[in-house]
Amino acid sequence: MMSLTINFAQGPIGAEILGADLSRAVDAQTLASIRGALDERGVIVLRTQNLQPVHIARFAEHFGRPLVHAHNKFALPNAPAVSVISNIVDEQGRNVGVPDAGLVWHTDGSYLVHPDMYAFLYGIEIPMQDGEPLGTTYYSSATAAYDALPEILRKRLDGLRAVHSFAYHAANRAARGGTKIEITEELRRKHPDVSQPVVRVHPRTGRKALYVTEGHTTHILGMDRAESDALLKQLFAHLCEPRFVYGHRWQVGDLLVWDNASTQHRATCDYALPQRRLMHRTATAGEDAVGMALA
Ligand code: SIN
Image 1 (tube, protein in one colour):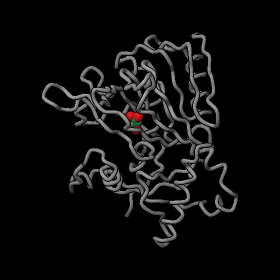
Image 2: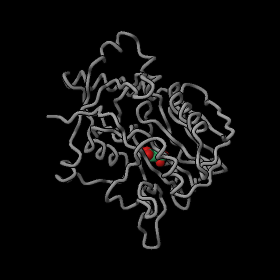
Image 3: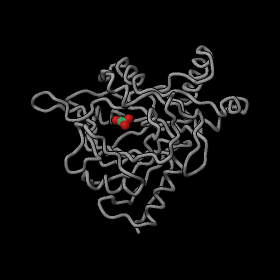
Image 4: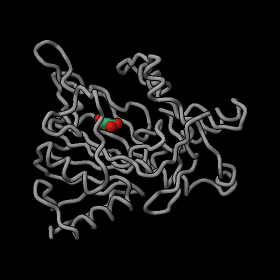
C-alpha cells in the first residue's frame, strides 16, 4: 500500500495527494483512498509523478472505460486514449496538440447522451513568468453551488432540462479567440443537440449538482427565451463565485483528475511561445445516460 498524504484545498473543492507513484501498479486500498478524495472534493492533484502515456492510460482504466476518439490527430500512437494539449508547434509551424482546450466554463461531453465521467491531465511543461506558473485551470464545485442555492430556487429547478450544444460551444470558443471549428452538416449529425437535467444526481455519491454550463447550454426547455436567458445568466454567475472555485496552479509532474458530474472547469490562455505548455490528457466514458436526444 502506498503511504498517502491528502491535503484539502480551502473551500469545498480540490485536494492534493502526495506519496502516490502512478508509474507502479496501484493497490486496491490506495485506489480506494484516491477515489474517496475525488468523490469528496471533485478535483484532485497527484503531485510529483513521472509518467509515460501508458501509465496515465492504465491508471485511468481503474475509473472506467477509456475514451478513444477516432480521428483525434493528437492521440499518441502507443496510447491511443491519451492525447496532447499544447501550444508548441513543430518545424513546419504545425500544432503538436490542441492549443486552446476549454476556454469557457464547461463539463466534458455535456453535449452527449453519455457525457464523459473523469478526465486526467498530466503536466509535462508548464509556462512560467517571473517564477510563477501560467495557464491556471479553474474548477467550480457544481455540488457546492447547488447546495448554496435558496430553497425556492432549488424547487424551481427541480425536473427542468436544458439544451446542450456542440455547435454552440464551437461558436463560443471561436468568439473568445479560440480555434475555429467549422460546423459542417456531418458534425451536426454526429453531435446533435441533447437535453440534460439542470440538476444532475451524481451516480456514485447521490449528491445533486448544477449541470448547466456557459460553454454548452443554450436554453432551458419549457420556458420562454427571456426567462431562460435570465435564469441561466444567474446560474452561470453563481457557479463561478470565488467561494466555489479552485484555481489549479500547475507544477511539472502534476496529474490532475476531475469529476465531470460534480464540477465545471475552464482553462486560461495567458501565455504564448516561447512559454511552452505541454500536457497529456485522457478521459473515461460516462456510464449513465443522463442526456436525451432532442426529437
Ligand atoms: C480541458 O478543458 O480539458 C483543458 C484544461 C487546461 O488545458 O487547462
